[in-house]
Picture 1 (cartoon, rainbow, N blue to C red):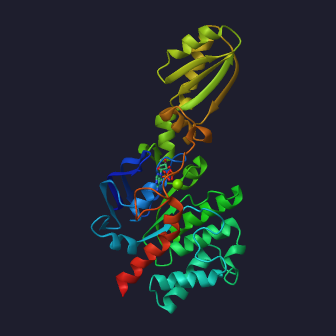
Picture 2 (spheres, rainbow, N blue to C red):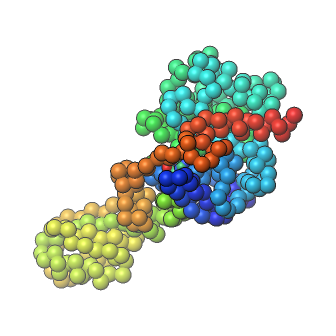
Picture 3 (cartoon, rainbow, N blue to C red):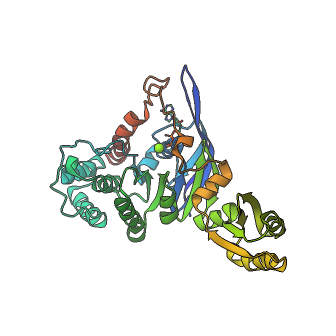
Length: 363
Ligand SMILES: Nc1ncnc2c1ncn2[C@@H]1O[C@H](COP(=O)(O)OP(=O)(O)O)[C@@H](O)[C@H]1O
Ligand SMILES: [Mg+2]
């Protein structure tokens, strides 16, 4: 059953100086219980899409249904049913007051959503266990490590038992160990609480390790979507690099005739090929070389990564951050939108805005 369905979602930011088409017609479907990753370089439009889906930013065009409620007609309904964890700006991002303790911050969040003291306590107990925050309740938020702070942010986003939670770059800035630890927590939220998770990331490994399905976004448009393994196989193919003892040009011509070879190039004294189902195709290819008296000197088969998928589709590498440098919303603060300030100012109020839905909804 789809829990998020968007069609033609678009957002343009305009100012006197320039116009940015941050999101240019996004269609997506997320099913209940899925972990879906929105993968793309900085500035691709991930946060903007998330802020539209969480009702914090009005789309320039398009429609969406989130948790059964229409984004434009029933934003309050959406807000009540979702959790949102904004992108961290610093170590204390997402928190209300760094001088609060963990327990206080969770209690404040429970009250903001109008949970009874008993419900809050039960929920906090569950979430602190689930997100490994037990024992940290008396600690001041400002003393938490980056990983602990992010886990607290997620607990805050889940306080009101939403069926779907939006996580914006949940592991950015974390060290590799905290990152893989966070992946386990996110997976277990789905396993234990049945939460649907829609997250953004610019980490290939994260999308690969954590997500059932990935949507790859670049320049405001989804350029590919699917199960990571299928995307890699369909779009990128296996990369085979080999060298021979005889004539490389002749070897290249022989290999190029094989139906599984998608691309082939001579690179110095080695031949580089993109091959479909490399492990199945190779024996016949090697026999063909052998038949012409060409002996193999070395061979290597590399499984494609999601970066190869991105590279194949865009000609750029997602790892190369300079190619995807985001100019940033330089005019955001003073821009032409009285109710929608810059990214950071808006995100810092996001929690209050969403929690406010709890207030109005239940009072
Ligand atoms: N409030 C804003 N005002 C103007 N431009 C913005 C604003 N928010 C985002 N942008 C621009 O929109 C594009 C997409 O940004 P964003 O959605 O934050 O990307 P991502 O989250 O993928 O890094 C970027 O070029 C960014 O500078
Ligand atoms: Mg972002």
